[in-house]
Image 1 (cartoon, rainbow, N blue to C red):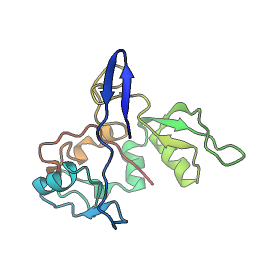
Image 2: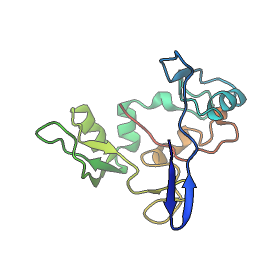
Image 3: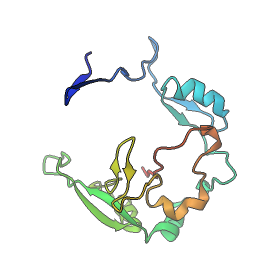
Image 4: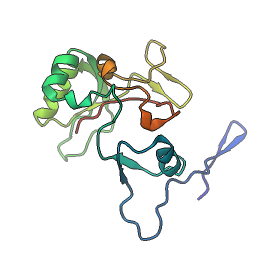
Length: 175
């Protein structure tokens, strides 16, 4: 597959075609113990670009994610303003392509999910995101997105399992 792209007289080529599992492997994502050594995680997953899901919580002393129940998050981060995509579902049940961005309190967002509303998606829409430029709307570099600023003392920005890697972005997903 030719992934070359001609831009302003310069030809750019993307030679990475994605992780390719060995023949006969049907499950693409490995379950990895959260206490795996950073060196092993790096050599087996990061270098090979193999997807992985941690089978437990981080083992870092600073990690307090076990506290993060919905009532706790409501209390600690509920009044935090977050940016959400508003994707109303049309009559034919397809999601709208022209999403608008809204600001709401994190408490309102989570309450809408609990009520079964599917139109809102927590987003980093206020961040102009590329690998070289991660800035919020005020021009400040932003790695940790809301509502995690409010919980910053409850998780390590660089967990032990990442070794010397620096996270590009830290987000909270609820599903």
